[in-house]
Image 1: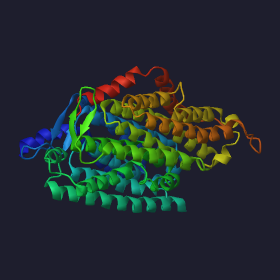
Image 2: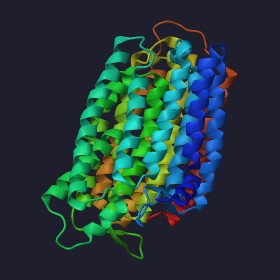
Image 3: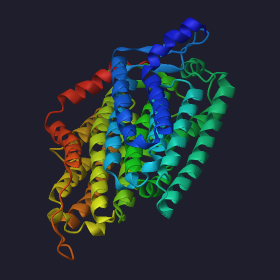
Image 4: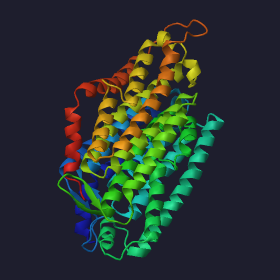
Length: 500
């Protein structure tokens, strides 16, 4: 790789360069002007807006960068990656606003420099995860995200459960990381390359494959499955979601999951693709039966997530198991192995970002007011906190997939993709899981509206800033529920020029 090639490649990682510059700026401001920590979230927001501008440029690109010896590059820049980067930026901006109103984060004001540096470090890692087309870069970027999130999970250090969450996250993350690295080493030993496009070329050879390669592919999936909370790699999720600050819990449920899915989709399609037929269905190499494997994992994930959520009494744990179940639904979109399934995943993520972040935001605001995340303590909140109760009601109904919310549109396109692929039995299982999820969401609404509080409490209002953020999250759920054409077109355009 000569100098000119390197310089040319830099134009394709402008968003990553911008995030790196913001990280350096935050560290310098925190070190030099220690009494101006209040500026740090605003510096982060400005940096994310600039980064978003560069990401939007990538919707018109389809290129491979950091090319060596005439092979395909380590980073693929295309509209598919840009879509997921926009999801990450959107979630990051919302989380920074969350942090400004979170009592947990306000109580550690002296460590805000480290807090925002770690969040931006996660963003940098997630951007590389989304665009990576080389196993080494995939592993490094995944580790960058993991190391930052381990610290953030136990950041406030205000309770034993906070430290416990961080420790469990490190242990599970270390194991999954080691398994993934073992799988990468096996593939490198068999092919002599870590580039996904080159591996695909090797796999085209008729004698290639066997049990060892199948095992290596599953090992790599284990590392990615940990990031997306897919069963049986989900065990860290409930404890970490409950113990971590609510802002970080919400962030892990959206941004980290989005990056993980983008990585999984690119890994499977680039490495194992043979052809795409005129109907948009992928013909994969007959090495690993990804369709059956993904169907099995998705059914296990959604069923376990939904049934485990039935017995939860803590809102964060309930939303954690709900997040696991939604990972199962999203995996079904990938199991279709078609462009239509991919469009369904993109629509689902765009909607899921608003409804899940909205649910966590309301849980945080309620916790700020009543000092509890227990569902039992939500009794009568429909009368004392009417706005917050109505809002979380809309978010939970949308998470269930009931019209006229955007959650219905997300699930509708997912079921359409399943039916078109003639996966009727799988669609029925997913529908039954949706019915189960309705029970535990309704349990929350029942406590708020149908159970009177044990003692009378005055009506509690929210601040203008919290109200504004609530509307930012609530309005898209209602608007996209009835007018979803722009969202669907955006998703379709994002896969039209995919770099594989």
